[in-house]
Image (cartoon, rainbow, N blue to C red; front, side, top):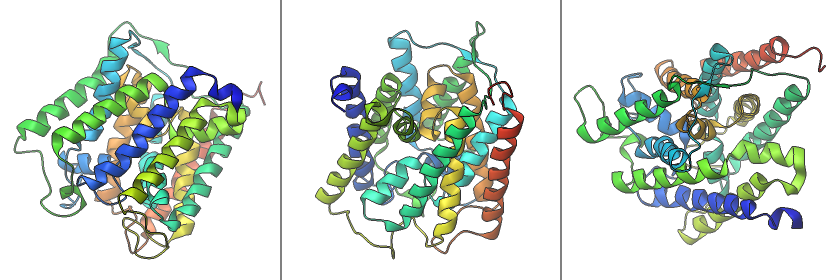
Length: 357
């Protein structure tokens, strides 16, 4: 532990965690849905609806934070000369991984960031989801140890890494110009939003800091399993949780219990399996949904494919009514999670390096 805290990079990662925890609470205070100040999967479902990928009138808004995450990462990567176009490894599995990341998140109702924001606000229904996320991380690590490898990204000279940032520049224009084909909810959770410029500014800041620190929720859990408390990402994760908890107390948003929690359900077995899917996919592809956005912003076309898959998944979970609600998880949502877990098993079989095993 002492060795980790002597490393200046560890303190920078802890700063990133503290900013993320504070922003997650304050964005909810400023207008985002309760316990959902930051939720990558929710933001993607809102944004997919705004682009017409589903017709749920309560889930249609181009979330400025989402745009900020990617463009903040791009600006930081360019500013520090770390932007590099790369890609070319297992494109279809990565695309499908993005789809199944959102399937798992939607069944749980939230990404790994939102899991801990809900938990630090007292939502005890998240406990099985937490167990599932840790279990998924362990499963993913077992797969990596057995030689599972989706392939290494190689540097490209064709500028392909710019396509995902350019897509988000287009979304930024849509946010302010508001062309007629982009939809904006007038009621429901998507109509609950922090002021646009504040949300965008926070997104840009978090995107830039996450690019510099490689901050990732599942990465912190993964590194704890590998390196113990020496891992900088683990300390960033711990500070994120502590700051979110203190900020929740200070703003009066800490309400412990199982019942009546916002954006939650009591179908906790499926919360476990949803997060098991998210944790295992995240470790196998090198990062949680938030981390995939950051990597895509710095020129990683493989992560860009995951992001496109997440947009597709965000449209499908709403269009096909797979997502969990306060009433629980629908049958087709449960089936989608089982298919996602089968997808993980097939990847463990097909992409396994027999020489390592």
